Length: 161
Image 1 (cartoon, rainbow, N blue to C red):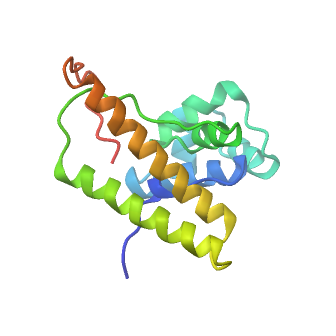
Image 2: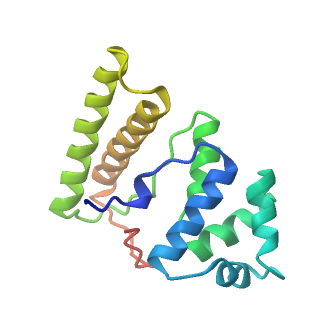
C-alpha cells in the first residue's frame, strides 16, 4: 500500500479542513487533540470538536490551529472558496530535483483528471483540486525563478514537508 501525503489533500469545508489539520498533527507531530487544544491555549478539546461540528471556527483561532498542527488547510480552503490561488512565498533559492518531479507529477495528474472529467469519468471536486495544485505549483516556480537573482534569507528554516 502506498503512503499518500496529507498535504496534497484539499478540504471541501471548514469542518473537513479542521479534521485534516488534526490528522496532520496526529501523524507528523504525534499530537492528540488534547495537545492541540493545549497548544492553542484552549481550556479543553471539546471546543475544537464543537468547531468541527458547527463549522464556526473563529477567525482569530485559524492561525493558532494551523501553527499548532503544522498544516494550513483552513487558510487554503478559504482562499480556494474565494476563487484564489495560494502559493508559499518563494525565496529564490535553488530547488531540489524532487521539487521538479513533484511539479511534473502534478502536470500528469492534472491532465489525466481533466481528460477523465471531460469523458464523464472523474468528479468535479477531484479535478478542481488537482488543477489548483498544478497552477499553484507553476506559479510558485514562476516567482522563484523571478526571485533567483536576489535570493531571500531562509529565516524560518521550514521545509513544509
